[in-house]
Length: 264
Image 1 (cartoon, rainbow, N blue to C red):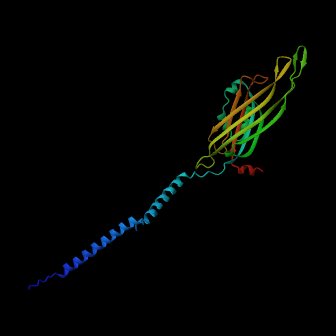
Image 2: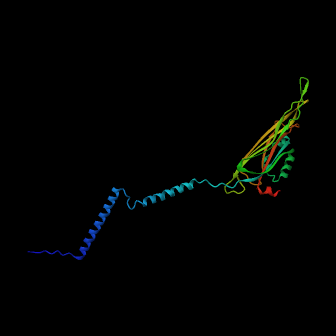
Image 3: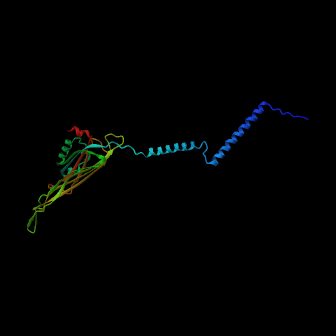
């Protein structure tokens, strides 16, 4: 009887053993994954996926929130508003030369009034000197319920005296806001001035009548502290008793609010 002997080198034996262990380990891992899928249990890598997804979604939400935040508002633009209104009666030749830009170059109120008096008969009607918050769209007025002067008139040989009342005065509507990065400058100043007056004029030789004047002036433009704004409205069609043109001239200056306290 013959007996065959198998001989194997030690290195080859170690390689065969390692390949057998690796194959069995991979098969075991594959079988474990199949069992987990059929049983409904998540795999080992599954818990990390929601964390990464949650991380990405939170960053996206934070980015959207940063974009939707409105810009910060500037401090409330409180200013001192100094306004004067004059009635100026002047001849037609001087009325043509009346220029609001030239009048605005008079830096002080005294120089401004002096310039008006050199043009004609200037009379101060109203002055308003108050602090206002421009963002609140301030509305300021000074009015009077004025009785009309008796106006004599004849009717059928009898004299009658009509009577009545009329509201006169001034009303200011002002608003605006600061320009970004420009201290002491307004992005846009919106100003409206309404003036109502009553005068008495002669009608013929034996009667007189009240004359109502209503003036509205508007200004909308950037401006700075201490920069005079001058508005001119002139009526050459219906003058005064001497036939002169009648102009209403408004001068507005914005000052820093602390100047109001310093004057007290």
